[in-house]
Image 1 (cartoon, rainbow over the protein chains, first blue to last red):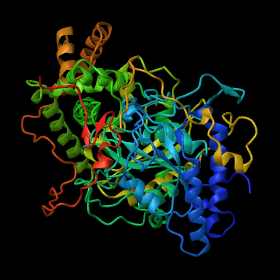
Image 2: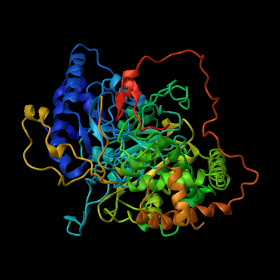
Image 3: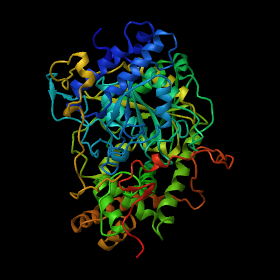
Image 4: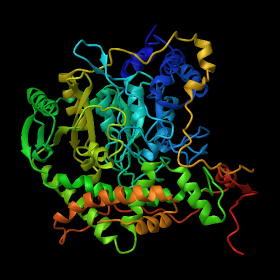
Length: 533
Length: 95
């Protein structure tokens, strides 16, 4: 059977259960696809073919003996922010060097314990700081989607896949995995989902354990899936979510069967449309998309209500105080002493400074400095405390809204996918990418992005649904209604696939240079410290 | 808020990040830009608002004060750039 990699997660699960193909065949289909496409897309920073095939062998045994687990034999990608036992984890930064954890993230362990297979580690913005995947030390990921000219042919520059989970979104959209792990601090799951025609959900803060995930901003970070369909995302989140004593903010509450909720429809569901999201200069195609979403949900039996979230415009500036402040504190651990890169200096302080300036990329340095500034003596109240107060008001807006609506509908992003370099020179232009997503993190709410159509250039656009705390099930229901009406979008022209597919056996052992991107040696040109064991 | 070069250098020192003269110049502008942009928060009256401490209203969890992990010194020093026995090695700190 060909093109196994193009199946959805639910279809692949069904095929494995019916024994139409084996987990090994399915895994090989993905390894071929990665071999053929990763050089052009740069989605994987470390494919783990041998490990994947070993896991597939185990899955085939279990499938045969009738001992299959929930995700038995389903190949996934894992964002390189998730620590993996014995597999290099870098957060796509120089500073982690060849850090090889001796432990697995809780979310990862949940997936592998459920029988899922890891195909490799996926590219992302350095420490998940970015909205275009251009800050990765492994170089940018390329969006499988390209703009189309009037003649229907591919036109224009290569586009960004969104960020920070750009490797995850590109790999899912290009069928280089069935689904992927991702993380979202200000929009890093939902914005890449919107830009690649995939589904991404950031669950309620506390739904997934943060243990073993490289920290960016601890009060905002949440893990979630990127997937091809709403159903696939529901299947993934059910397994990823859990209460974990090792994360004191993970919440001890039952995880519902999200897949079962999908069939419940949206009849009588109250959908809120916040007027404050009609930002100045919003493109007509985004406005049209929003109107379409309203019409679809109405047609499916939901009721539409105008609501007000008055503090919306302050979410982004408040975020750019809170997130860098927490990042500057979290990233203090990278000191060249306990793990990762060391650039020797003349004394200990000089070693810290040399290591950190060589190891962190430009955007990460910028955010650490902003964070250090707003937390420094005399400024704490004016910035951090003020931002946390504004955050209370943002959450209060939503608490008020939940009295009259069940779900809030907005666009996911202000624009479709953009070209490389387009926003890199101007930090604030890049930060504005998160204008519709960041409020959700500030209030700790769940949010999902669903593909809802194509732009005039033939690139995907997404709608965002925001839910009450721990009410992801309702979000999935509403998202299913949008997906049913809009239809799935998939890339037509698979321009990234190069050459012949290698024969099955060869691919298993293949470790071509193109498949394992090298980190650019950025930051400084000093020699890394010597390793002495 | 205008950030001058001296401030950039003071912050960089606090953050333990070495900056070159050229970088310091660029950062003056970038940090000033970002700080000016976030100052729009001053429009919001927060005089009677409590700062957010947690998004989900849960009690901080407690656990019995017992040893539940340990004896993994090999694991802990495994990724260190410089190690002797089970110690991290750093440049001399005390003369």
